[in-house]
Amino acid sequence: MKVGQACPQAKVRTTMNTMELTKIVGGLCASLLVLLLLKWGADVIYTVGAEGHDGEHMAAYPIAMDEGGEDTAATEEGPTFEEMLASADADKGAKVFSKCKACHKLEKGANSTGPYLFGVVDRPKGTAEGFSYSDAITGLGGAWTVADLNEFLTKPKDFAPGTKMSFAGLKKMKDRVNLISYLSTVK
Image 1 (cartoon, rainbow, N blue to C red):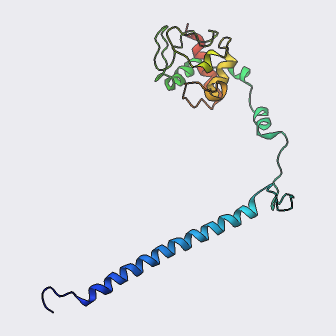
Image 2 (image 1 turned 180 degrees about the vertical axis):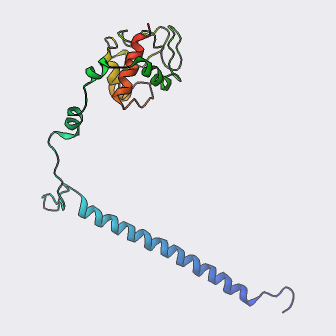
Image 3 (image 1 turned 120 degrees about the horizontal axis):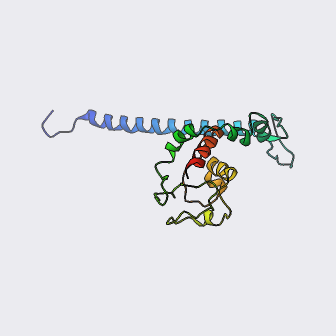
């Protein structure tokens, strides 16, 4: 072979690379098609309460639901908020407050990202001096009762839709009552 002359095998390699690429793309498309067909089949089999072409429900496997819902079972188990509040531990609440320290201070007038919490229990809502509250909080009215604090601390966005507070909430009632008990002592 002479210098500068193309190798005959070079064309074969280019053709093979194109062929391999075509196989890979074809395999991916076939896999996607199989997945879509499996999803469609699962939707047909397992969709509960979907309506067919004649308007009738097509539940392949009906699932019996308790008429009371999930909340009924949850409220029947365990002590009530009032019972737990009566046995709350303010010292444990001080530990729970560590989740709040990043945004709230306990000293009167020491606002941070959130308002100061000195004397928050029974204080009128949205009245910490020097803090700019959202309309969601100022529009609530009334004072921060222990029951309101419990609801707010469960999920702030549900209690006051539109609040600037981005905290997700305290899921455990024990943590909420201990924190409320602790905040009741900060006066």
